[in-house]
Image (cartoon, rainbow over the protein chains, first blue to last red):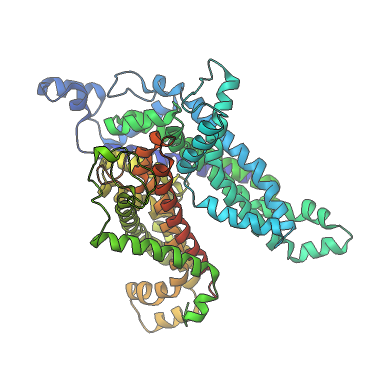
Length: 314
Length: 271
């Protein structure tokens, strides 16, 4: 339990560090948010009044603290461009991007772990060699290009789905998930390739160690050694990688959403970046940061559960 | 990393394949400085969206511009952005990693906390944050991607410096009164050049991917001088009428990434 508490504390510290970085990045910018909101023709008195009202005259750390505590309470500020609360703008988009990322993550696990085991089990066999080559190529294809190719082949030629025919989850949840399957394949492909390669390498390394030989000599067959002994150890680095991959896939969905014209977080983020609508950008970035940090915390906890050495060390 | 001979390189299939691919791409880019089949921005209303032919070996785009000439130009832009990214990322990352690793203590704790937090952050998102701070354009893109690449280099170099700093030859140099700066740059860093070389090549691989992704989103190089990623986003709507317009620049991106990946893998396996 001490270990979990310690991790919880570092997680919180990381969150504070990240939020401070994000806040400072958007607050050292030239340009006055009050002027941006009111326009260049506004009178100096009005600007001063607005600055006071927005709390812009306080020291940076006070503003940071106010922003951070408000953020934890679900108040993400007001959009500069639309003058509406940011939370309302993004809350309906989060399920779309999150579903896309999680679908891609599920696909990655479902496909890469069996493939990694098979390629390691039949090391240097035909299947293993073929997959190694295919993996190398897949890793070189950026998700948006595979997305374009998938749209062309499966959307336009074979008509498995209608490109641009996104269905909202409020209308038809089945159609919504169905539309997201092809985009999630585009996001998952390079991660699948990386995970297979990593798991294969780890399994082969672990299988050469002494404990694996001991397990064999105690009368286990190949499958027994593989599933009961080797796999567990080989999975430890893979779990770290998958944690990072999940974060990457949520971020990667920003690009792929554009390819498949999915109205998720991506569109708001990109328009807000070009409009310099910082509260919206800040909120989205912080949202993704919280997901990333949360996943890392979960990874540490899963570690503790599968690797007793960590518990004893503490 | 020593005794580099042609025979040893030829025995390493990764280096050979990577070398051939990168050689061809570099050749295309270098030739592009002196000669291109057409001016990459020259439009022609009568030659819109043509297929692959002898006259236009990759066809033409929706404005009648020659796709091959644009790919030649676009690869140059993409590669230059990648080079800039690596110079910033590897340069700053190496300095941070070397200093934190060498001195340790409080600076190390604080800086590495920040680096760890940034490292956990997807680099494309980090670059998007920085682009939104600096604005849109290819110069800004180089700075953004460069900063986004600092954490990974800093971590690699820090780890290597930690590994080296207690070795006997360093102790020996310390007894001879070598200054800290000289110790880091003359004695430690040359010793980790093998690791650096492969991480720089993998960095190139990631930089090309990230640049393509960000330009695809429209925050990188601006038209009419487009990088490869930008060409793809322009081409996407014509993919059914003229697939070659989308596929050709896409394949060049894939080849570029593959070339760097093979070279990086080859150096990693160099014994």
